[in-house]
Amino acid sequence: MKSIKQYPEPTVGALIFNEKDQLLIVKSHKWKGNYSIPGGHVELGERLEDAVIREANEETGLKLIKADYLCHQQFIYDDSFWQKKHFIFFDFVCRVAGGEVSLNEEAQEYTWVDLDKVDEYPVDKYLKFSLDKVRSNPGILKQVGGEPMGDDLRVQ
Image (cartoon, rainbow, N blue to C red; front, side):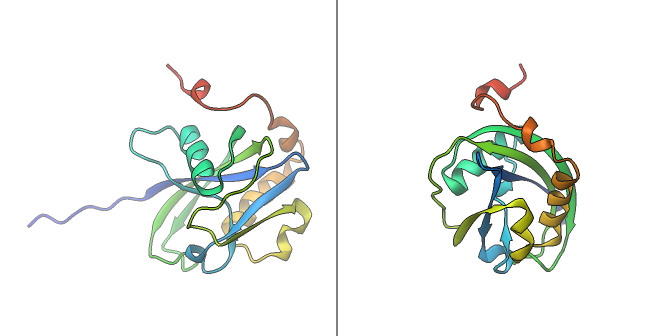
């Protein structure tokens, strides 16, 4: 009998900022009660940019107006997740044009928090790494803005 080969799972994460430059963080049972960012799996045949738009909308009800690639990280069987997984995170800095957050079943609560106050919340080293990237380039939030996203991102 042939064994089933397993591979790392590509995922996207949305560091969503509002017009006040506050970050949306969500508390999830999947991350053992820690706060994290909305995100999830990239579907087969889906571009990373499309995945982050879809995941942000599915998990928060928000429509992104911009998403810029920030970084990638490797998550290999870390105990901070509720299941034993090997993920490759692709994080994006995102803008939202207002709207009300409407969480799905994956998160239990949310808050908008100033960047300099995020460390007051329980967050994992992966979110801290991405936030350090944002903090080391303060102009990045000024660069993230623009027109509504969607089909215009697809390269023909």
